[in-house]
Amino acid sequence: MKLRAMILRDVKLFFKDKGMFFTSLVTPMILLVLYVTFLGKTYTDSFQSAVPEGVLTADDLIAATVGGELISSILAVCCVTVAFCSNMLMVQDKMSGARNDLLVAPVKRSVLAISYYIATVFSSLIVCFVAFGAGLLYVHSVGWYMSMADIAFICLDIVLVVLFGTALSSIINIFLSTQGQMSAVGTIVSAGYGFICGAYMPISNFGTGLQKVLSFLPGTYGTSLLRNHAMRGVFEQMRADGFPVEVVEKIKESVDCKLYFSGHEVTMPAMYIYLAVTVCVLLVVYVLINAWQKNHA
Image (cartoon, rainbow, N blue to C red):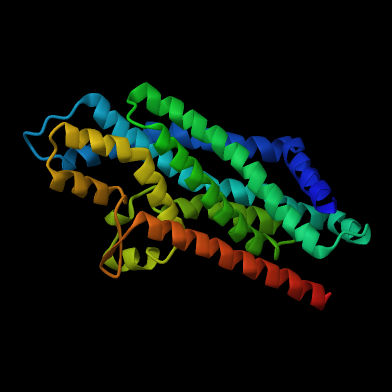
């Protein structure tokens, strides 16, 4: 009962804080506008350059390809950055003294830690699914090639990446205790995560050394899963339109739908396993940190 009460309390505080909530909600919408405005032309040129001369491509197929890449990029970023933003309640409770009051109540440290995690996951999923809905409307307006299975898998990807983002933010935020630290972490994550996960620029465009480093990061595979499911229908249509198999495979590599680790292609089941194992490892680390803090206190 205490855990349920704490989760409800954290979720209510997140949505009650208009600044935090609207920042989390508006950020994906702003990213969608910026992506369409500035990156849409870049993605379109990149796709057209990968198509050999003599192969005719429908305009809506090009737009759908770009749309799938755009919404997968937005979701890959938002699932992590929104989780960091939602999880800042952990830091705010320290700053306001509410955390000490809750521990005196008494609420066990373990219950408090679990409530922060579950509430952050719940709040982040709401925001990310709203962003996903907006993305679907955009894709529908430019060219629709998705199936219900694709949408279901994207929902699964969103849940998994949010779990990863929440676990990562929980480990980092537990050490923060001031507004300055909170702002610094938020800025770094918002500005840098999109690059290292391949959302802003496909990893295939990076140097070989950097590609090898990024192949160890779980966010890379989260982005790839979202890309594969957002663009699967487009690739199927390309084959139906007579695109050579080599061209389709080249396009998939150029947008990170195909990733390699030590020279071997990483399958989607392997991506799911790697992400799931990473979430479990991060949660264990989070539990151990909380146990250490309890003993230290």
